[in-house]
Length: 180
Image (cartoon, rainbow, N blue to C red; front, top):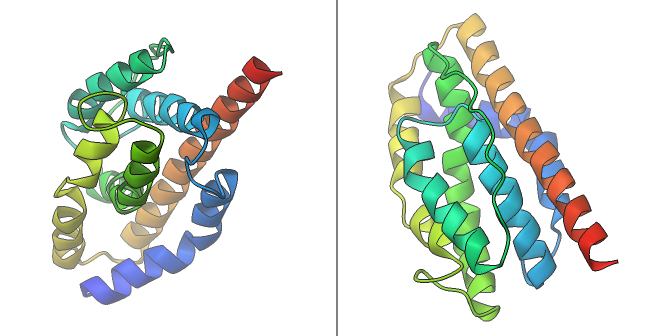
């Protein structure tokens, strides 16, 4: 399978899961409360999920610093075991590295709130500039999954979207309770 069909298949197969995540922050992070919830959620996701090699070590300190800037203590959580299956790893990477595209828009919104790559938006600044997405696209182009491997790739992407959704729902609840 070439890149087009694998990528198109993933995009189509995960569209509803992606839509559910996007619907949780319909206005992005244009409000301080939404930005705080986003950072809480990404901290949890990065800390606990099966991310691409080195992503946890690269991004978790930045998220912790951003949360600290907002006066929030990041909750430490044990990380899930790294998947050994190539297609499982690619599925999680598809969701995480794909989020770097949205990070570009969110970075502009965080900047409007007064945060930047030096304070408060270090994670977004780094993630938006990452080469992870083009690297992942090359890996997908090189992949030639059979039907079972493609099913594992899609299932892993769904698990990753579900993890983001759960983390964001919880973070939005915490932020809402904190302002009531």
